[in-house]
Image (cartoon, rainbow, N blue to C red; front, side, top):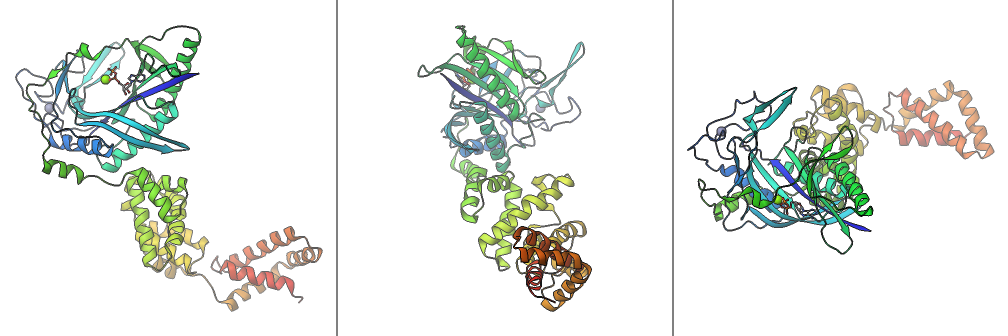
Length: 493
Ligand code: ADP
Ligand code: ZN
Ligand code: MG
């Protein structure tokens, strides 16, 4: 009976080498207070200088989110006092942010929705407070780090949709190479705003859940708030506009403070930074960074290669993985496979065996391109299986060996004697041996055949085929061995 409105403010750390208004190193995990200077410490009289790379990355995200980049964009001071902010104001953007009025299509797991982007603005991050016992410590390494804030319109309606939005945004900024998306380290964090109202009555009084550092917490926090607010409305109570925090130990939100309004910040144009006018060259350099984003890429791979949605989404999870996949398919086609056949075979191997190696060896999927089991080698192995040079079973071993020994599949297969046996005479020898060793099974299979017990025939002949393959070290062609076992069961000795 209530309508839910959710809007997100997502902060991402841009992967600039230095901070946004000074030359200090921008890195996570360095010795506290080692990356600071008079500018980011807010000493009187110092002058900020815009890091053009931060502006370029910010505009790139804006473009990827279909935002308009205005003719002029500038910075404002947002005043407030907080111990982690030595200047007592934050340089941010207010009246003309670098990206305006965009939208993004959010899709997956049955959800399909357009979320409008209100704006993207560039600002500086604050330092970090570490509370230990009775004291609070301050690390200013993060003060002044380039931060891009992406603000949506309140277009989402559930915790699940918001989670999906953030996951998709995370993948996109990683594809663009502007943010590592590491939510645990705070490289991507979100404030979630939610209100409920009677259907048709427009937005309700909003509650903001601050500093959510996992997409799961975004979903849980929002769904908790939706329940809490709807119970309050049911009871005829009014919702207070406030900021709350997610308590991950108690799985609930708790009040933090009542929210200030924009006018409380006394925004005014930053006098020490000139207005930025993106010229043609700058916009060209922004567009040079555009890549096919994960969602359209998954849709294309689904359509062109005949994969299902789940496979396509898994492959496009990481740009390096998708690049590896597409290059392996292309190579396999060059080796003579039909495209859809190659696409399916490579997808199956990639999503099972190769991914298994990655997780076992604790190799980030982003580094799949450095694997000794290169996309070329995976393609080669796939082609060898397709043309019957190696059995599927031995292909798994071969794949592991290629990874471990850094050799081409063809070389390895020859060295190990793993070539598939397709010679009927050789396989027939193996079947004969099995016939002698498994006389009892053969007899019961025949009895079952006579009795018309198809199920039993099937399982017993599978057993005999298995024995035949084992007798050849897994090298006999399963198709030929199967046909021979089948035929031999039907003839009397
Ligand atoms: P504030 O001034 O408190 O920062 P904004 O209007 O700038 O609020 O909006 C911040 C975020 O909150 C945006 O993502 C916006 O979509 C969302 N939002 C604003 N009003 C509501 C509301 N009534 N219900 C849900 N979300 C809202
Ligand atoms: Zn500095
Ligand atoms: Mg706001």
